[in-house]
Image (cartoon, rainbow, N blue to C red; front, side, top):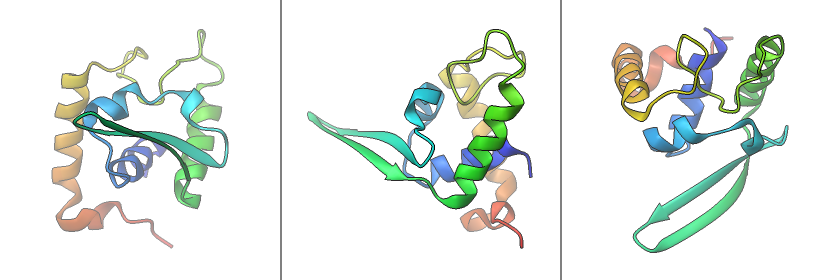
Length: 112
């Protein structure tokens, strides 16, 4: 499985919305935890959540793959042309990916 698919899978299971996934930047990854902001109505909760080991490995792999790009992208998720995703563009791609995963994301579960 490609690193970006793994990132999408785990970020999605952290209850992030599409627009939050698109906005997630490398500054939201400190190497061990992922910064998450949950908003509902007027309430806002900011958290650093320990990254799942598979997510951490996928983020590290993805970061290494991007190191040669100039400029290095600010966001974790990118469009195929290397630019930041637009919310609608990502949501369409994610809907296709999640439909492909099957019930409960079984097709995306880490394999041993």
